[in-house]
Length: 475
Image (cartoon, rainbow, N blue to C red; front, side, top):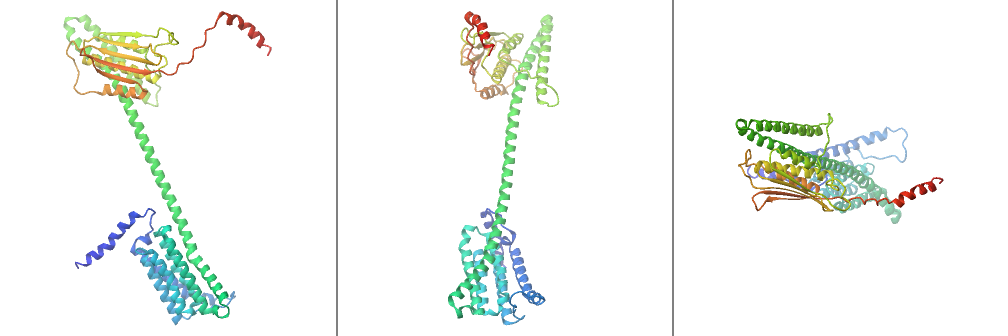
């Protein structure tokens, strides 16, 4: 019993080592031993049933066409040899799992021995092609066509040889004229080989090709679905990052001011009631502003409600600084273009709307950080609009004059949001401490190509225009 276990486990491990190597799906008859037994038994049963049924069916035909067939008697020597040959061919199909090409050659070689030993089985000899057909299907399903050609060629030669031997021995084709007999026997064998090997091979290859096409389409559809899911996940991640930036910019700017003013009100409520009341009004204004910004953002996210789609611009930085002056010392320096095609254009002209929004949010976040981490420190916002190819914005604050109130060691989302916005619009962002102990944020935005300004209209052109119109009118 100790030696029987390895013998049982070795055949069971063979399919695991063979199946991963084959790319095309293998059918059940060529991969499982039980299925091969079923195929072999069914093949022999069908062949034996035809051996028993063909003679009575042919005898029952009232108007036979062609020469009368002479079938060997049941249990005669020719009938027995033919049945044993069919049994051997069917048993050879069991080799389809371990030696498929050898199985095909054996199935095609056995009919030669049957033809030599039982030439009187001429009328039933065509049944020997049934196991050959089954063998061709099994080997075509198991072995790639590039490695199958030698076995197919050998099987074809053997089928032709078997038919030629039977025809020569039974009909005496070589006695009268050797050349005519050889030509006739080879012709009969070629036809038999085409029917036994060519047609089954063609049908099997068509089935395999359709199966591979279906598998390829399934794999392609799966890949497309995965790619679509990956794109959706990437889009969702980008949207989540964008919403996080917006929420952080809105909440940090307003709520940091509310927190600072609340701390100041707590100290002034007993000593300076008037200024405490003014601080409460400012807290109310900041709370209303943050609610309006959040309502607008939620409206943009919802599909079932109209939303205000106002986009902040560089010009809005002026109002942003004015509102920030209520809680800290903030100064605004605007350096507009003094000459050139942009001298009479609005602030930030040539900068795209997304880049202007990034600039506005950067200043907003920088002012909120200055008020939170450096309370009481003076802050300067500089908008340099003089260059023709870029717009520069700088927010610089000094060191804190009083301890920070409400700041936490965790954070960094504001700076990360600034960098993400700058990368999104292709801007250059620099942040860091100053030599005086403060902090600076510098943003540089590129401009788009400005349209060429129209030439000024002179008095001569104005005087000549009516005459030109008069001459073009009759046309």
